[in-house]
Image 1: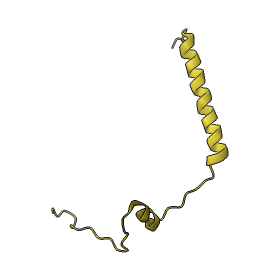
Image 2 (image 1 turned 90 degrees about the vertical axis):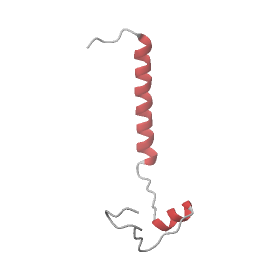
Image 3 (image 1 turned 120 degrees about the vertical axis):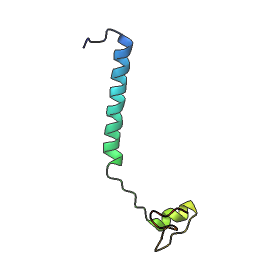
Image 4 (image 1 turned 135 degrees about the vertical axis):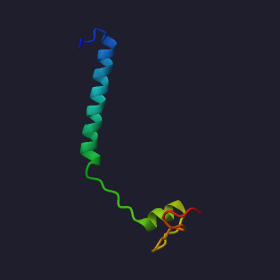
Amino acid sequence: MKATRDPLARHLAIAVALKLAALAVLWWAFVRDERVGVDADRAAAHLGASVEASASPSARSGEQP
């Protein structure tokens, strides 16, 4: 494969690589250890729905409504 002779393409590739490296470093430094706990009750409350303890489907498997 021939090396590109277009300086614009080379500069853009370098810029994209540097930005990806910067994003990886920022993620590693600030986001890597963060965890978000989600439970069904809080998610349902946020979406405006209710959660039933024993949710059963309305139609049996293989049965058409």
